[in-house]
Length: 254
Ligand SMILES: [Fe+2]
Ligand SMILES: [Fe+2]
Image (cartoon, rainbow, N blue to C red; front, side):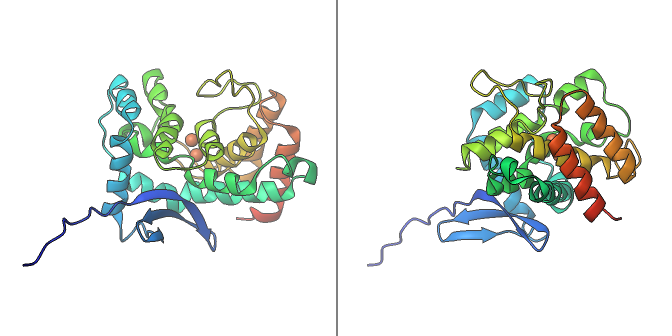
């Protein structure tokens, strides 16, 4: 007599992100250990992992319903983000971090910063592409939807056993020193800390240096001038901005 054991369902969850020679990869974990998945070959698997994240957090479904967004995962967006903007933001954040003085560096955990910057915009996979890729300025309603991407990213990744510090950086990567960014800071998290400052400046610089459907790519100088305005408004620490200036001078030579 033979006994057939029930087929175990292969469970794969996201356990972080890593960089291999300047390219970022999402790292997944199955029952056998850690694996890296190549976006080009494993689109279906990536999609099912994100789908599981949605299923395991009812708050995500609640947010999507509130904004009348269908729970559809845009795998093309995920592919573009991991291969482009999130990877780029991570490189800039690491560059800025390496230039900062030791006194400031000691207040930031490099590994947390690295992982959070590689995952910071994951929530965009749930933003409808007609909003994400609108070739014009977003109206108020669309802007509100766009702005929930950082909360969605946080809620998606909260289901994946990532450290709280990494999750906080992802949630608040659009915050600033004046606390005028989004989402609003909770009473127990009242400061936009240095990690947020570094991710935020790297994110903005990366975005300004890319061509977007609604605007041309900005030159190095123009991008730095846009961000200097934020220093004058008290949103960015001068020390963090100065490190970006140096980074741009040294490494952004394109
Ligand atoms: Fe973002
Ligand atoms: Fe971003």
